[in-house]
Each structure stands twice: as structure tokens, then as C-alpha cells.
Image (cartoon, rainbow, N blue to C red; front, top):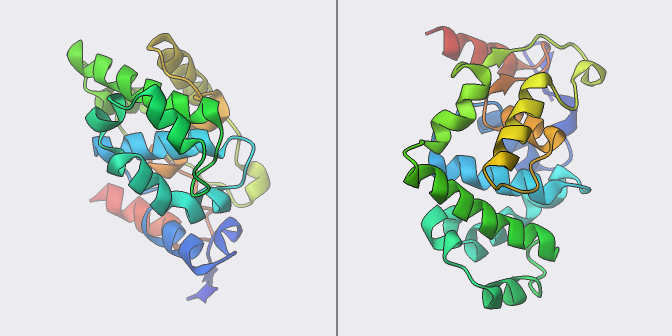
Length: 196
């Protein structure tokens, strides 16, 4: 869609919810723990699949994983895993479901050690979004040294399904990096927002 001579990033043009996600959420800096945990979960669930698939299942993920309230997810049991693996509303991959629960427990363990998870995550970009200036999708990396460091550090803390590519997708989603293309109106909008 053309907007004042600019065009949205081409990856989002498949259906209205995808465009809305691009226009309102992707790349917006987030420090909200619930949202960060949700996006870490969904990016891990995406592994081997398309983001469009996950976006269509997002409401079911929110319902089945208790609106991503970390404490509640951490209390889920093997019986919950058995139930969730049968639900077609989400990706029925036992390892990914178990990882979500395990990651909630690892998240809680960070808190118990006095580490704020949002601070820990944002430390990988020195607590300030990186503004990239890519013109084409071909220029956008699949991972970076920062996402590789995040992956290593999360794994050391007991997280799973947090490889460097997953971590970079997460960083893009929660605004740790602005990877909207230069021709996209959201790039300049976020850039201006950060400047104020």
C-alpha cells in the first residue's frame, strides 16, 4: 500500500492482521515483561514455520498460555503439556510447548536472583534500540553478534528455542532493532519517536 510515496515493508502484505501487526507493533520498543515473554514464546514457536502461521494462532496462544502471565505458565504441568499438544489452535510440537513452560520457569529464576528480565534482555543492545538503514529485505541479516550473545546468555540461564536467528527475530519484534526498510513509513515514525 502506498502512503505518501512510501510503501510498507513487503513481508507484511499477506492479510489485514499482518499489516496491522506491522503498522502498530513490530519494531516498537517494548519493556513490558508479559509482552516480552509472549514474543519470545511466539518467535520460538515460529521456528521452521512462517510468522503468518503464528500470527493466525496468536489468540489461541494467549488463551492457552494464560495471557502469557509468566507465573501462571511456570506452574503448568505435564498434564497441561499433554492437553496442549492435542490443541489445533497452536503449533502442536511437544518440545516447543515444554520449552514455553521451562522458559517461564527460567524467567522466574531470573527474578528470584534479582535480575529484571526486561533489563537482562535489553542489555544486549545497551538498553537502546539500534536503528538500521536497510533498503531491501536482502540486506536484513538473519542474526547478528548481539543476537548470538543473547542466545548464548539465555541458554546459560536455562532457556530453550532461543537460537541466534530466533533471538534476532525477537529483537526486531520488540523494537531492540528498527529493521523497517528505509522506504517504509514506520521506519521514520519510529526513528522520530526515539528522537523525542
